[in-house]
Length: 402
Image 1 (cartoon, one colour):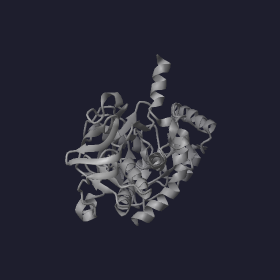
Image 2 (cartoon, rainbow, N blue to C red):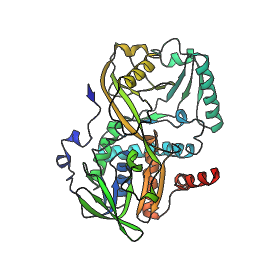
Image 3 (cartoon, rainbow, N blue to C red):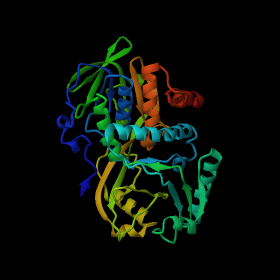
Image 4 (spheres, rainbow, N blue to C red):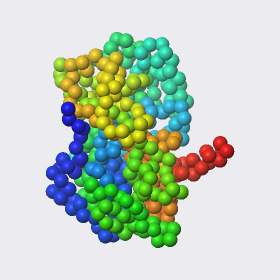
């Protein structure tokens, strides 16, 4: 069974042949720790703003969560009790996506399979319908676009679904992308903009001059930098790089997913489809991605029989055609999850900035986060929409509890 997928750089036959030397420069305006979606998107925007940028990745580009994701841009379907803080940023970032897409595709010369069919959220049986109705009412009160559908109306939109589907909510403004294509496009766009990407190079420490960070120490040496950006996803909260007083409330939340190959005989879906158990995303290349488990188990690697069973059974419950689809690949990854499931975009110390903790909304929030990094590092201030996502919110919550 294939692991899904390889590094976007590796797909182009290695760093050197892809145009990136892999050599760590002695100096840079910005050194970014983490070669995932947020790190590369921020690097690209910063390079466009005239910064000399190096990205240092401990493993391979996208290895943590970015290549394991489904690529959902779904502020409406994701909206749930307790996520009111996140909604304005999510809506703002979705509005940035068309321009981000166009610029990225132009820079990379590569289509990223941006799809705008919307999301169907399904319910089977009375209990699920009641819970879905509660979510729908919340969506409507919050002002996001959502439409209640009967089971018959759901199946009219997706005829391959089981007759047992009782009701649904259609979220017309929820979109999706193909993570593999986005990451490959970001590698190409970063290269074209002059960003240096170094894979297989772990950051081991920070250089400090007094209270200011002045560079990054890695396994291959040190780089002097005006600003270090911590965008290492689920590893952002790991001990070692940051001093204890700057430790971030970020942990890994494992997810397992699989890719099914659809055919004319099996049929496929025309929308993203969510149930209480799984989400399914049809891609332009004929794959149907089924994800994702939620496992709070630390960095426990690998795919399990229980995880795959949960995904297949959850999908089969609403889509009988998956029984004839070939399983092409299975994989797991680690969502970077903060204590409140919302991102951390903040200056931690002079010369040290964090952009991490995006939970399961990395792709949705990438344009807004990258633009916020560019604004912060060029003007010295975060955009208004990003200001609620500093560490101050955790300190305020701690004081309120005390």
